[in-house]
Image 1 (tube, rainbow, N blue to C red):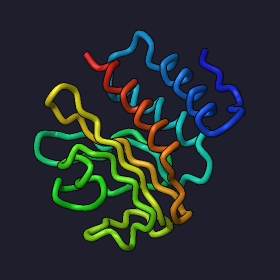
Image 2 (image 1 turned 120 degrees about the horizontal axis):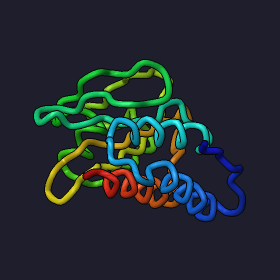
Image 3 (image 1 turned 90 degrees about the vertical axis):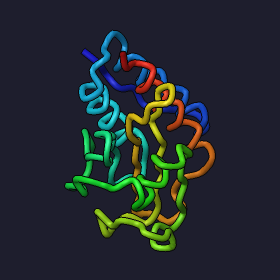
Image 4 (image 1 turned 90 degrees about the horizontal axis):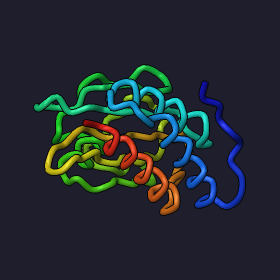
Length: 160
């Protein structure tokens, strides 16, 4: 059975601890749905000030909601729409301090004020995105980005 432990220390130290927990969760498991479900729960319960944490998976045409924690979400996101679409298309993490200022932002939850979206790419293949929303403006900083990019890499590396 997996048991979480309280995170301590600086934010980078906390993300290092969370990364170890993420590695333990996916160890020996290659199913993307199982790993996305567990990692969504881990992130949502460990990272403060989130109102949504989860995955959108690329189906070859658009992003489709996958495992997540939070309120019900938009089911499909075209690649040319919103923060998730930008991360998927550009294959660059999007760290948005004010989602209302982002052109084409999709408001799945009107409480969201800031967003961090990490593209999930294996080789040249787009797998999807890891999406985190917060009700706090400018919630995410460079430490959050680095920590969540490392967790996203654990997810991608676990895929067969």
